[in-house]
Image (cartoon, rainbow, N blue to C red; front, side):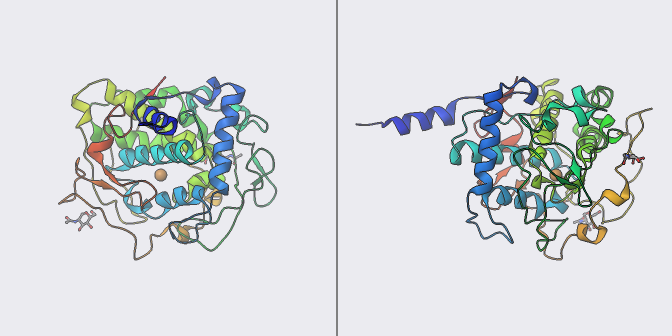
Length: 337
Ligand SMILES: *[C@@H]1O[C@H](CO)[C@@H](O)[C@H](O)[C@H]1NC(C)=O
Ligand SMILES: *[C@@H]1O[C@H](CO)[C@@H](O)[C@H](O)[C@H]1NC(C)=O
Ligand SMILES: [Cu+2]
């Protein structure tokens, strides 16, 4: 036989467009299939030798933790996280038998009321808020998970998934903030706008592990949040195609740790910015990049270009920003519905 059924279904898997839907629109059994695939990644042993990683879920966390100093506050922020979401979706589908696509959290629906979001449902969702001194989550499918990476760049402090929901900070995931960003004319103004309010709204609104700028993929909600941001990136791109398949810019190297960013026109006009309270952040010294933190690859200068390499540390093959600018392109092949 020329093509076995396995080969044929593999080809179908590789060539069909994955339709990414909002979490609240999934059926109960679709939600369960996604959660089961996440639990499967958490049980699958790590094989890549990345520091402290015990399972496949943590390998996906490590590809965020290790290069975090060159993937935030830089032009590569959105393309990097786009490929990271794809890596997670791909691992679920190819290694854990998941048939669906990566869902996203439709955060404007829940802005200011994350605490009662269906995403935090203890039975059909990701479990609720944290409790007790360590703010560990106490219910839902991930309540017993012990995470090896973090806080920050540390790899020596196993911990629970912890949350400190803050529905003042979650207001920044609201539609008014989103609309301010989507109206901006170029990537250089759009990206910092999205990285500030909607990005911080989801991270700081959930709180705890999610406010850790380095190790936050230890909370599975990270993937729903960043897939929503990716959807917004695509919505912005789709307003001016094909031009915005090539619009990339921004610095390659972030400002030194602790420095104040220059005043920017990308702060939403008239909308307040809320940061999570300082005492809910990881220890500040855990957020200082180690001396051997990776450096940008693929760009000759200090400006992010299409040739910039997004290094996936072997979890999936690395790619360039050019490869991920079109979500319908041969590498990614998904859509938002
Ligand atoms: C939520 O965050 C805001 C902004 O930092 C802060 O003023 C407020 O005290 C926080 N609320 C809770 C319940 O921690
Ligand atoms: C790139 O920018 C960073 C941060 O501003 C600076 O420290 C570094 O010297 C710059 N490198 C080059 C090659 O200009
Ligand atoms: Cu990130």
